Picture 1 (cartoon, helix red, strand yellow):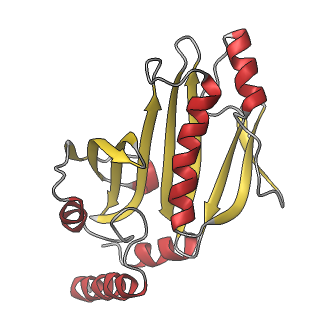
Picture 2 (cartoon, helix red, strand yellow):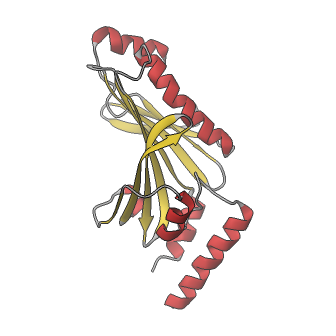
Picture 3 (cartoon, one colour):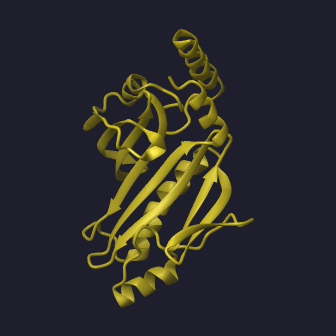
Length: 215
């Protein structure tokens, strides 16, 4: 059974690799950690560790790259693996007080531009929207566009020295046939630092195929 699963996984990666060379960045969902590291050369991982406490897509291994240039922004890239299969990627981008950008909205807009470019490359379309309401995120039925951290909101945050913690406003999800992408903010207004997570993961159908080959 183990050999059969290995063969199925190999065929899955081979077929999907032919159909679409990469899903996100330089890798395809289900790729092994060795394949991801090879794809990232000459970059060398900053951290590589196994753990049973990684929550992202039930991953048990993470490979991180620090100070990577992504669309002219400096980012940390985290690859998440479950049973040595790629199941999620997270880009962390931070705009600090001394970034040269003059206000909070310009920093938000700069990071949003990175996200827009990444999802445009893969032809992603709005799937659904979550909004923050009474301490929890709620999916908005038939709503595919969220208003969050816009110019008006950013101005209010600056005016009152408020924080937009872990988005606290809205989160939208885009996708194509193979991948979903979400966008999350954590704004610390005391020094106008904007921390952002660009999260990518497989669609439900791809995830089910990956789970069917778990062993």
